[in-house]
Image 1 (tube, rainbow, N blue to C red):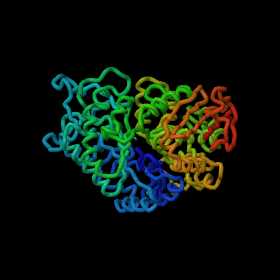
Image 2 (tube, helix red, strand yellow):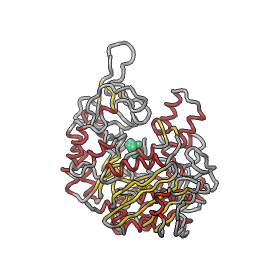
Image 3 (tube, rainbow, N blue to C red):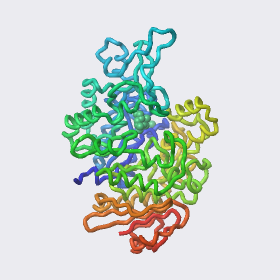
Image 4 (tube, protein in one colour):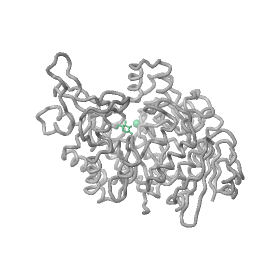
Length: 563
Ligand code: GLC
Ligand code: CA
């Protein structure tokens, strides 16, 4: 079925790093309003706004202390209302980030819940320590470990018990066995939908329901996950929220689903089950990393093709993304921002990007925008922003980077190796301020920003690309405009054609139309296998290098679209 959220491009904003309006070095809502024209100009029709709710910012807003008010750092509720209004004027809808697996420990519910006799006690998951009467400290209620490289329980003096937290200890998990919690959540959704939200990006949405609190199987990371990942109880909650709330509005949901496999994903976004409209999986971004995502492994285009094919064919509709606020910048990851293949390479802070920086960013754009699904573009991706050359752990803000460092230290991993892994995997790579122009602090702010500006902002910035016809920004615009007018590019069936370590070829088919896409993910010229040459020996609709014909070769980091 066709729908507006399938036809649209989504642009993700990480508010604290997008645009500062009042000179405190932190991006804010009035700042976003002042940049709506740029988003409109890109061709996006939906904004996904990372959390702007009240929060002590232990995890940059993913720890909410009040779902009904705005973090003063970002502005006021009046600013938020103005954002909805100004966006609507430009035909832009906004989806909110829904973080409901956990709240902040500073949320009123949690504060009350610390009293064992409070009616809020059951809003969270409290358990006594094990073997309490034995001498010494009681043991944790079970052996689970969380997603942030830490144990999953924290002791609370006031309660005399432990509470469960799958993320930071300042992010206690809500108890979804308590129907009152689900009612609270429905009210939050209604509140934002009534304000004008067009839907939600649902944070870690497949781990809400903890079926049991038994010990987990032995495993290096997230021990215990088999007791809460994509459980039947979780499916039921999503269906209940859908039928009681979402079904009454013209809105959509995209779920962030951790460690999800295709079988689970099919259930979660089966149209008839009415749970989620689409979801973010992680498989494709993990093809060149091992163990909890931080140890690099060689990139292979055929591996990427294998994963993408599995999901393109496996699900009816995909959420397409290469970047977000938790991931490395794609041009530094699969692309060639620095030297050649770059994951792990160094980009001197103020130097120009590598020879194939622009070309590889365009190949990645062509890739994302010619798959079947709704494309999500993360702020800065459209200008090819790169990872940051962080010099030391002090420059990093990300709780996960600090957690990882502690864990690796415990495992006796030497400092230089720890740093190498942390630096390339840190979520802060994506969180440095948006590079708007080449003035001090990159036009993001007139004060020192909360996180360092990437030293390459003089070369990589929005203003420089706006009027350069061959810029990455203009290439995104071209592709978005092309896609907007093509049922084949939006709704066409995906057909894999060919893949080797450098080159992939696939097609999109719709009624009597066919598009062929060929992408060279390397800095060498590649020959198209004889068998497929006829697919490409026609006039090109698009070449990332501006060529009009490619015959049987693709130049280094060239991608083509053929009708
Ligand atoms: C999601 C968010 C991430 C956050 C985590 C806990 O993965 O994208 O930024 O830290 O959930 O809420
Ligand atoms: Ca500000």
